[in-house]
Image (cartoon, rainbow, N blue to C red; front, side, top):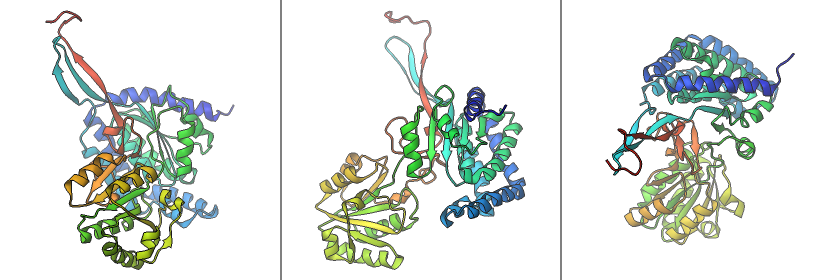
Length: 422
């Protein structure tokens, strides 16, 4: 009798839960040994990885996958190098598990503090990029969690080949194989099962397009760490140094169009708009960026009139909307209304306005005199990230090792009894 998808996923979940208890108590040295051994296994399996990836690429071409998706799917020698380096970098990171902080004596004589512990079992659902398999597995393992990885069906052969290398790493460190499991079935019912097993899965992290993340957020019975959109803003204040503002705004948009930290709307104080925007128009036009602007913007430069929809659109493309605002108050109001709580920046030399912006803009990252494309776990010193969260509970912003753990209270006494001071 063939195993149903639900039975299969339940089996994975049960195995992951058992493995999570072993990994949670593994030493830092043991986890690092697994990561280094997996890196060596990847290096030794380059031919197998390339052959498996070619099967996925051939199927993708036959199914009419867009060139951009085929590019994301490809495991080039440089990307394999990147995966190997990524494992070694995660191994070099400080282990957050077991750290105790803020121990203090209470009037009763007990000591109270907090200990950092793994979340347990993390389910990760992602599309296209097979290198996410390594990123996710390494971060979950180092933070003491077991993980169930459900990659896109278009990368199934690549993900299986990568998973085999991870398994070799786990075996070398005498850690359970179920600490990292790649879902073998491409049946979409597997996703529905994974997000509906709170008895086995503690957190779900979706990595992919807005449609996938909306579906997971709507249907999951397990807590989700996610962001839907990256509608990021740069606000150029009246007291900005204009050359600095031009460089920041240009980099925020053109560093890479397809990342969630790319600027999608440029806000400019009306006091400097006439001096600032013409130079920006030239820079963006030479780069091939289409400009859409409010009425005041269109009066100063060549731009297509922006619609109401433009202000709440994540383009992920060489398109930029520009709005001239009456000052800091209107800029903050615009960002909090149309933004996606991802990353927003102010360019100003005025300390008071900078502090107000940083305090009042309701986003997971707020920046002063820096481009929004810096919103990245590696740039923040996290070593790597599992994703970016715009939620307010548990983790917010780029989620690295610490974001894959939580804290529990630790109380140390010496026989004290409640109601009897020592």
